Image 1 (cartoon, rainbow, N blue to C red):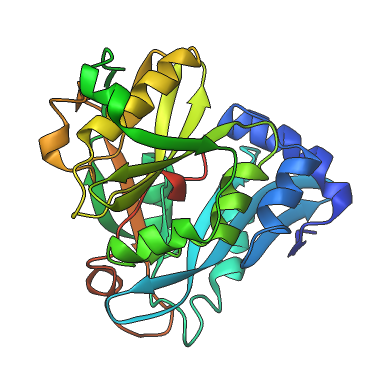
Image 2 (tube, rainbow, N blue to C red):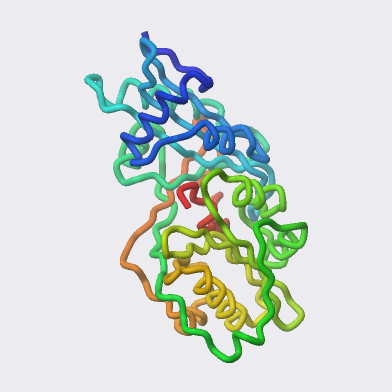
Length: 306
């Protein structure tokens, strides 16, 4: 008989195999504890189990956020995976997903949930969970630009964690999105097992900016880029590029929220790839989720695979 319930420690070995089969990477106990138990918000991790075997998993993360019409927790759907066994996707994953989503989002929370589903999962989600398309975008990437003379004069500070100054920068960039508090940023980047990220504090014309880069092989991923409009950031970003080069990286990758005027000077070009964001509203009425999500920015750091 199929049992749907919160994940238990004894399920983690089965989850590791399920993740390896569906996502191409496993899941360690440390990864699961970090993601669902140490989160500075709320985490849900549910499994569908039959005869001791984990057949499906569905997760959701809630973090403090601000959107144009309010503020509160916003939910992101993550780690939906179903074992492809005789009964197919329908039985374990659909029933499990509906159980997870039954009361989400709750009153007082953002009136939409978001996620980065694969095309296959989005098609399932449209039919089973009421998913709606929200946005499609093309990342930018290129070789790290060669050092320039003005970059050497630019002031940056580097580290493995941040302080309250980071949220202040986020506020000066408009203060919308998942709240970039020190608690969130240090959980997301400093506490994550088996990953390395570097924080950058940038200075320009009396203003400060924030960037966080993920190190993956020889590519740096711009997980966070928050640059208040009062600053001129090209020289500081070139100084960041020089630091990344010194660390052995060769290319960098951005999401297109970066000021288009910086694309050329930073040697960034469209990659030809497409990334997709989907959303879902309340199951029993409420505002249109696509309209409610208008004006809410997403960063690479909102994508849990980075």
